[in-house]
Length: 229
Ligand SMILES: *Cc1c(COP(=O)(O)O)cnc(C)c1O
Image (tube, rainbow, N blue to C red; front, side, top):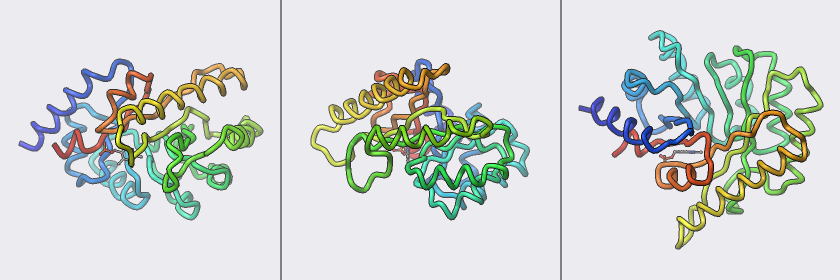
């Protein structure tokens, strides 16, 4: 029954995605749900805790779920980088939110098990204090300069991530504003750095992914709408 429900939710959401990729956020879900989603052809999964990701990645490897691509989406403490970076099938980190974290990733990148790791820089478009992320274009540029100074790096600047405002009376308007802001910041960086590849936008969760898709999202990160409803 659980399998039918997860499959139905996945299929429903996938119809609405346009060209966006779906990252199924399994952070509230037991590993068994990851397997059920995998059997329904969902291969991108997101987690926000390093130890939980390590545990699930190990179980997945044990079962030979080799198509899985793991996305780390939570606040990453610098002292956990060394463990995260060794995970097989690690695809992207959506939450690079400080220069200090980027420096630590660059220091440890030799331990990567994958040829390339995609990085999204997290931008605090809602300016809520409890949210992580770069607060200004200057900080973002500093981070980008740091990464670009090492062209041989296996860390690839892949795009930007944001979350819509939580505390607001008009959450749809606010979320759309955050998403459009992120798209503009990405455009500015693309032209400023003359980037060959378009930046990818990671935005949209269960309650606001439709708005994010309208604003041009490339990666939506959806948990409860797949696993909980
Ligand atoms: C939990 C989480 C999500 C998914 O949230 P849902 O509301 O369950 O879809 C997406 N992005 C981040 C960064 C998260 O922490």
